[in-house]
Image (cartoon, rainbow, N blue to C red; front, side, top):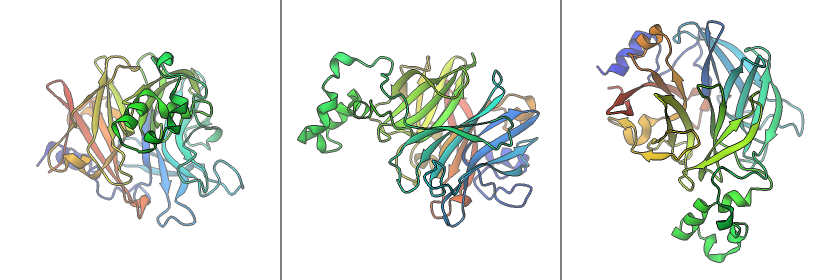
Length: 365
């Protein structure tokens, strides 16, 4: 028996990808989400999806709470889609990867999520922010849109990129995936295309550093490039400081943690709902430079992240938590997506261990 399976059995909760029922007897319908601690409880926020996609797929964001990370109580929707025509949250919109932070200074719960507008497919590529005075909500949408309009990232070399606004007009650059096209993407061709209207923001997460500063990490430039952007002190907006990471590398589903002064990021490739090999990055400064390293997964199915895609990395803080997760300091939370029935997508939690100074994820046997 593997260590992970032993942990799952000891937890008396199927963190291994099987059905995980809340106290209402229903599988936990909280996908692409995150967990925070508040008031002696764990708060798990995630996407609520309909079983059939009717009348629409995204129903909103749900909240589940627990005292032990094993048994979860469903508190229903804390952010709902609505029936108001033209509303950003009109039924038929797509809500993905909600992440919630508690801001001790403002005493607000702040939710960031990826939002696509009704009937627009994935063209809107918006970051949305909602707030609440209580963990149970209801959360109130305060903004939705592209990000960092008119702003340049840290280290962006303007003298070398003044021609990038015109690159898409060149016939040879209309052929995707050529070496020249990739080079121009790395230089910032798509970034400059979106400069005035704001950058795309799709798959995303949030991270609070040791100094209390918060960051929004998201896929941008048609999912070709990751951005890491610092938030304002109230966590409600970007403050203008951001960096492009792995330009042209096609990364999504970012997850991040910090250990002994080193930042680690585990991402996914872009293959729709189908799983692929995880990517690992490290940096000594959150604004980089970031170095890509080999796939952190080990064992059967490692080339497909064991059938899952990361959503969040939970930091283990107490002795009880450490015992629950076999001594690990961090837990990789992931979804095993079921695109034909997203509400039944399964939850895979894997303790992150370090071997030779590198984080690794071992598959259960």
